[in-house]
Length: 210
Image (cartoon, rainbow, N blue to C red; front, side, top):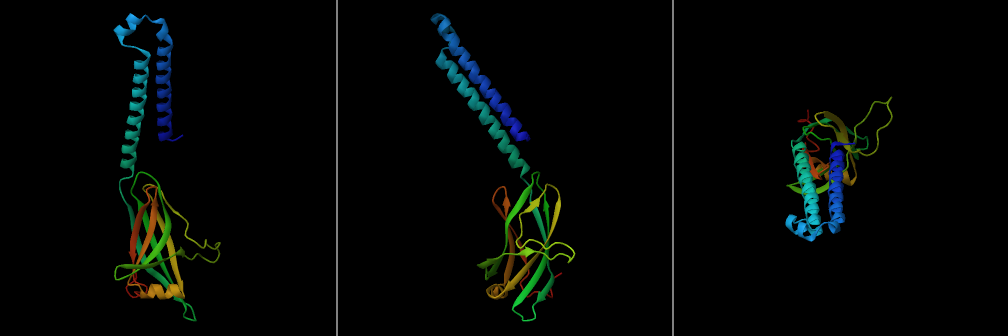
């Protein structure tokens, strides 16, 4: 059981105890002289109100504390480094080109996160033209072939993760990447739905690649 789950279990137990105390007070109410009730101010309605306030205050306090703790743990950034293009190929017919790039991620937060919906955006004069889907990088021949799509990238807290990716462009996609003056790696970080990005070299900037 996680720490958050244990906290809420304790809160629920406290809430149930408060409710039981309120019920016990109501049950004893009929046997208590009216004068004594008035002097002590412990009518059934007062008991219920105090119980509700107690439960509400406890829940609000726990929620606020948990929110502050989650916010603290999610501070920090997910650092991104890129090496592109580390390799490139052109088919013999010239209608398909491939670019390979390596990325390093470091999660500087206290919580694990994941990158979903990995894509490469194509821009020209700061306007988004379209996106293309990268593929997992090539693997040695003796290993099983990689999946055809990039799966979510899990980033554990305080650990580096390395990923090799490739862009295979043909037909309209080849025309798209060649016409773009800027390419950009993008993904959605979960939890939080936060967009992360990292610029890539232009498609034909091969001489400047490292």
